[in-house]
Length: 390
Image 1 (cartoon, rainbow, N blue to C red):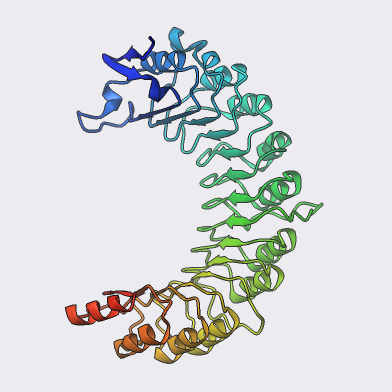
Image 2: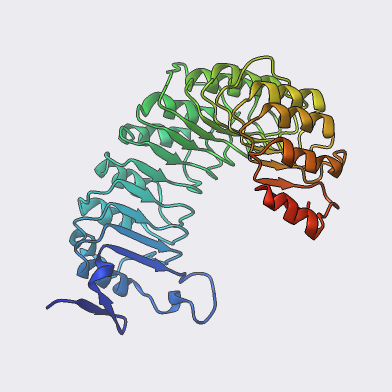
């Protein structure tokens, strides 16, 4: 009876034939006990050959810059392989070509922060796997707007793409993706060059896009935000953390156009000086507003217009006082978490009233320097709320 197979001096049971995870690094020095010092390409190849029912491979930090003879046809044995994750690894175009020629049922490919491969390698691979649903090319710095246009013809089935840390990508890539990928729902383009270059001549509305993660783009501006709100009318999640070129005008335009918004992350957007709402946001549940110049009037308007708000992060909002907090507590009946760290103008005397007035609260982070006593902490816990020191 076949119960397993030997690998690197160990017996691998049949149970591991469905999911193989290999962690480590052959590039950066680590602890002597790290498995990277024990795993070599021939061992990986043997594992792939011996596990015909393999569904997923995760190889984080593996060095395969060149192909050994043992690797040449190993992927052709993985007839059930659906997910391949080579994050933080040294790989080559030759390896990508081997994967491409294996004709696998691959639907998820992760090459996040990988090194040594080129446009030619990823182009050939994607040309063979036009049914991919999930693609992560974070940190592939050779990519530019023109190369994304070339690759986009293979993106017909994509629902998720991550192009963060691809510093040559601009507005052109974002709006070419929304226009040419009809099934795309999640786009990650953090730390790119968004906000630079003109918009494409033809702008196509894409109602399928639900999430845009665009943080740490200093050139991102209100004009781009307005265009994004037009192109993605059913947006539910928007993250523009640390985008200093955006003002409240751009954010309000998105909120007016995208009424399905559930999660808004605008922390450390230095251009957002205030955010007074004069319209309803019936579905907003999460607001990350750390470090903004929001005042009590703006906070009160958020409380009145966002009835489903459950998580509110006001860390470092120095203009907020107890009066603004009261407006949220009174109106947001689903509120579960509030972070007031560094809100030094909010008196801790209000905390007991917050807990007793809003039974849904489960966690409050106090302004810095405020430490609840053991008796206070226990009292709040009896009412279902964890009160943490700032």
